[in-house]
Image (spheres, rainbow, N blue to C red):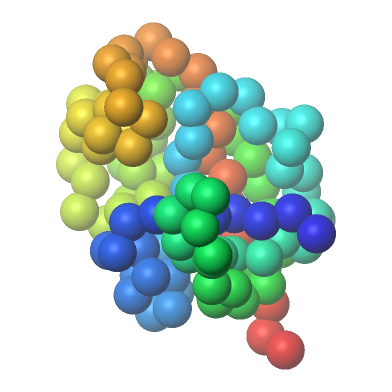
Length: 115
């Protein structure tokens, strides 16, 4: 089973409250995540134990330049994001490198599976 893992402490509450319905990742992730895939949504730091929060289904994967993300796509990632530039700054902290608005990103939309 594949996993969508989240690091930030902000995400755990947002995920459990179903406020986060999308993750935006650098690069083209269409080969990794496909519509209809079941994934575990997990929380934790890389190379450390992670906690499974829930199972989700991948609804859609949208690939485009970061600067072309819509307000709806940004809000699905984080309701507080106001612009692609704000997301670029956030991604720079996550990936620990400069991120431009021309870079390809994947918006991976998911829905929780109730068990």
